[in-house]
Image 1 (cartoon, rainbow, N blue to C red):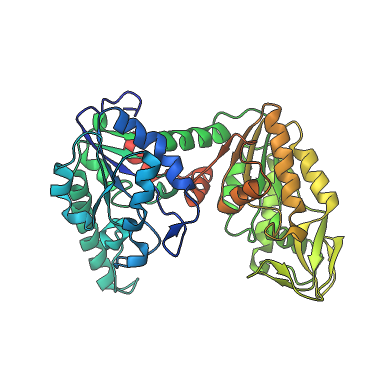
Image 2: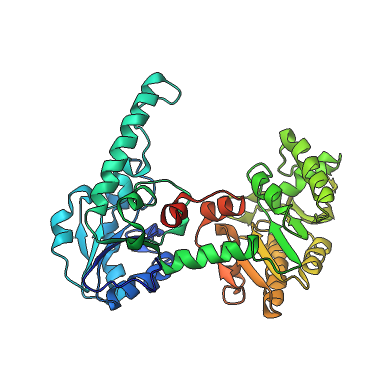
Length: 422
């Protein structure tokens, strides 16, 4: 069943969204996630349905934390939806009466799902690895099913539209689907777009396919890198992981970040790239600094900023961005690409002294997109780069799911998708 084909008239729909929006002093500072869910939510209301919205916010870990209550965003959601009121259920497990009273066109929002340990299905207060933990785990799984069954009882149909949590087998993202037949559970518009975007870069590839992988550690991206090596034509590796590759060949990297226990991993990536005829593109030069404050994203007073070959960085200097030669090299590698994936910046883009590499990547992707490429941007920092450089409307698709996108690219099955598609 697809959301386009479903008849919502007179039906109550319970929708899992990702309204884990950033807050400051009770005010939403970025409503991107709310706006992303609007097409699905409005479609249900316009189709004559009643709407039950459920989400998490933050990490309360099974405890009630007022500062993470979804009650504080209900008026903003009402305004975004264009409805007079969003009703609020302060207890997810005891919202049956509120749900039953909903009329077509009305909206009910449930409290933060993660106030309940049953949502994540993890035992609380028991040490992992102990016999007690295993017993508690079994009991919690049973409780999780009951919690999901309760949520399902509020509605006639279930819509999964929270890609950011699709990689979690939580009560509201996957288990709940067991209590609806195939004709009454479906992906929302946002999920459909996310799944299609991933499919475009993994299964519906137009060549050449170029992936840009950044980030500080190769260890956190190794699964993704290995999966991509069987698919891409070129793989650009940048960010802090650069220096693990340089060190693996005996280069001098000064005070740059490095994983000394992953040098063999870096060499194996190079070997796999060669075996798969993938052009591996690494930085040749780096913009380095003797004093950078990562908490304020500023160069410390009196610190030096200089450019060195990436394999000849002096002691006291830390590589924080790719240099101009590397930026040009990356742009050239992206020229003519027809499928592009970007996850992770080329440097500490938050500071203008170290954002040139990421800007060069972003500009090259925008150019390729304008020439017909499909470009998928994922991961919070890459998305932030697009926002900073004014590129959000110049790429094909910006994913809302960080961890979910990475696991999908790694080739893993997402429980939130499998629960709907079977």
